[in-house]
Length: 360
Ligand code: ADP
Image (cartoon, rainbow, N blue to C red; front, side, top):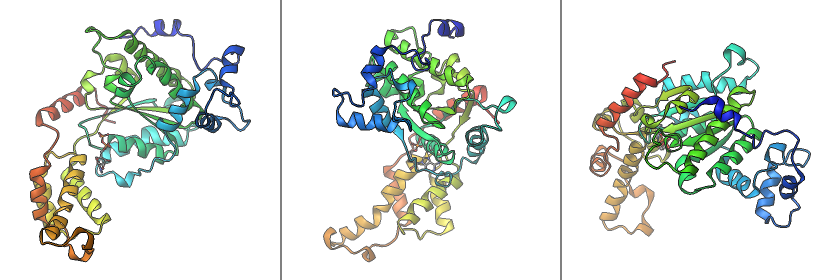
């Protein structure tokens, strides 16, 4: 694990330093009027400026280019997912509401004994709604949502990841309440160290843990959500900071039925009876939410393919010429769309959940 003290002692705060910036750094950045910055960067810095028209203290010695990237590519001002869009997962929704949403909405009540953890881990097979939950949290808690994939930090931002992480946490601090969603967090905080871990990725990891510790103790309204399909790769230091760990399993039969109905009804393609839906659900045991979406997509092509097969031109096809989606469409789609998670993998998640998961 990480020696807590060691990290903090060697650490010169990059963004929380109060007041004592040297002229050198401020003149480089304060420059909304800086001619070296192009228009789009200036516009971004404008957005980040406070009511006084100044860039917040915390952001002044960070590179404008990186602030722009955070503001344009990582910050989502209007995450448009709601609880009702997510099938099943009632248990996870309930936990998240108590642990995360209430504290973000009422920080005055959730302090002292009730003070919430600042780190939440969502783990489970891919395509089960982890990202959706992250976005819904931001929406329900009226928080700014930041989405970053940890693998892009380690691959695309080689050598700069550390600086980008600073910019990310810096902007989040100025946009509270904030939810920072780190996808594939295992690739950032994995325990594999020995076989040639690069110096830069080690620094990135350290920086990340430092930032997390920074808002863990304070009164900051920032929540970090990590998502992973490989929880077993997280080390002890990572687990310690992600205090709540929720298992997001494959959808139940009811949740699968809901996904089918919801997607088909949106397009007025739905005419299946309850029995027919039940039959489809029986055949889709082991499918993830995202597998179900792909299945519905494929099945919904059935009526179209059939109409075109009868010689109607696509350009003159009328919507009334198409029948609604049938069980047979699903049966052929099932040949094309196979479940993406193996039984074996499921066992691994359940084991990890028993050992490290939060039951709350
Ligand atoms: P991940 O768990 O990998 O983060 P996502 O949240 O990105 O998965 O889900 C991918 C897509 O699969 C979603 O955009 C949605 O269309 C569908 N999906 C997955 N889980 C659910 C769910 N529980 N309810 C509704 N749709 C889901």
